[in-house]
Length: 354
Image (spheres, one colour):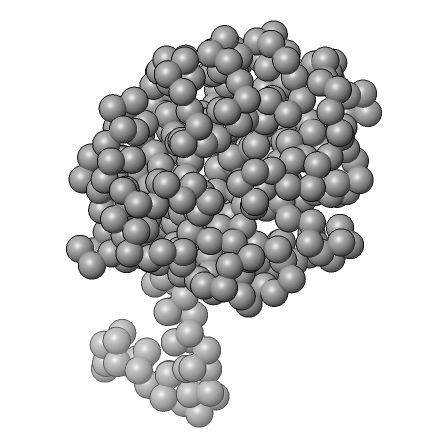
């Protein structure tokens, strides 16, 4: 290298034919090293679960009287301290993507005006993933003329229209996966599911329900722990709620939960208070009764305690896999003398395996 600079010497070496062949590989290596050594890529924003914290209330498409005056309905909810409206946008039985879109828009706009959140929910039958996906995304992406959107979307996973449970499970997971892919990792998605305790009592309802796999796709679970179908009195209501949430916690590895306590038309204030107490004690981030139209003064009074859940942060998901299912079931609450499984409840879109 006599008579030249070190830099010139490097250039001369690299100009030799055998080194020229290595230049593309060296360039690729340099690019990779630059990425590794550069600033880390921004991580995906964690989904916000504020829509599931605190007191909620439900409106389905069969509450026809509530579809005439959304402003009055939202005003009453707000008076009772409701933080979130769960609004059904459709199910597989109706021939439209969004039920009454103008009224839906009024609900979303008015709720946001009152400082409330709104969660859309849809009931698929899993017979057509493409149809159910289109309707789910129509709800999740629904935008009012003033630019307002739903704060979250929940898939109501309970229909047994597909009779083979293995096929049903595969279709439910496929639909859920496609919704997650379409909405991205930062959008809050909820799995509205039957009570795992009820499914343990009725093992033929949905054998192998994939709680663990749903936990990887959804950010929060909304279990239909309807103690009103199975128990009588506050002690049994609390026990049923605890059994439902304990099993769900086990099967999902501790996913955040907003608990639904049952049909408001078939409960007492003391039972509601017991349900709320059990849900709070277990660490649910929110709670509600089904549904708004049948919630009475005694129920609203007992539900006020749910406000205390609002500031709680959701439980972080555990990185460890869920524990294996125990071979011994927890102590059951006493059950009412009623059919083990009725085909449909009054709202027309919910199964009663809860």
